[in-house]
Image (cartoon, rainbow, N blue to C red; front, side, top):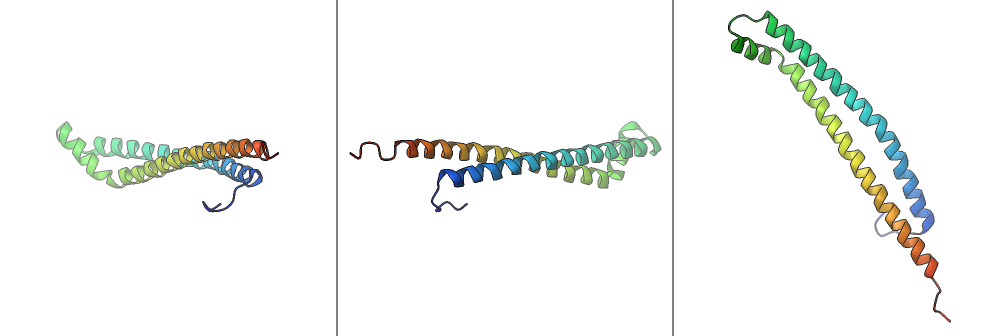
Length: 120
């Protein structure tokens, strides 16, 4: 719905319904993105532990060796984290959009209820 389009209660209700449906779909997206993040985080933990155990030398050197050897797993985890955070922000934006539509709907109902009053 464009900003210049005339609004009426029916159009607002349609926008609210559409927004609610998008929120519902967003819940599944957030769940999938979070599961992918957890999977990538676990893979990083395992890869780091394996690399650390296989490395030789003092503990601080083994740690840095493991960090270097798990660069790709860390990058995958970070991508999954960014995707999840983006989905979360989208969900919050949709909640704000829904509240805005509900406010517009309340204003329209109020305007329609007083239409014609005092025209006598």
